[in-house]
Length: 297
Image 1 (tube, rainbow, N blue to C red):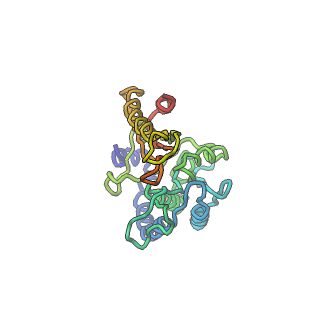
Image 2: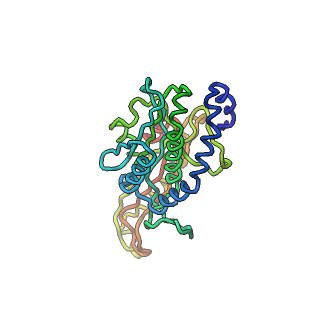
Image 3: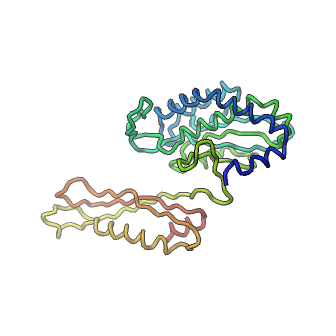
């Protein structure tokens, strides 16, 4: 199902909103080029999880320019802003975007490629941030008409730090970022959807994720005398095989599981047996109980 499926139902339920659609769309279209420039600026200046100081400041400035009053969170990472559309209601619908990037090199040959080596907005967080900012700008521009339309809630923009390290959400929740929030939309791009379409569904749409790391310790030695060493690599490779074998068998087959080993590190010299091997990856499920069960197994 996509947003177009119920658009007529939405319009029919509130004729006042029906009159606003063309004006909202026109305002968004008028800001399109500026939005592209802003997204590319963010793309060129990615910041790692928990260190999104410049990105947070940039987003806060953008919110002020829109006419909103941003709240910046502890350690100067993370920001929210509220738009009052129903003075008699304390409830909020939140729009959430992430601020951090992933730790990979940007290999594109474009003028807005990442200027920070080893960091890249390869997960779309620059786009998510821009989308939420533009949504807030459009809503703020039409705030009087939206208030007259009799909306039953207000809107809060939530810009979350440290999404990739899975630490930012808990920190912002502890600081009250989602207090009085009745529902939250976590914006995410999807290259498999046509431009202009929004994908929604009943139930989980994406999986939760748990990072894991296993360290296997042996004893280093020269490859000419392997009998004097304890080689951790065979044990590590066997462990990888066991992960892939036991992971699916630890799950109820009616529910999805994605267990991936994405890192394997064990030494640097071709003629030296290392003393340690490191295996790491992620476990992804749609139910927390499954995630806990597979991790504990």
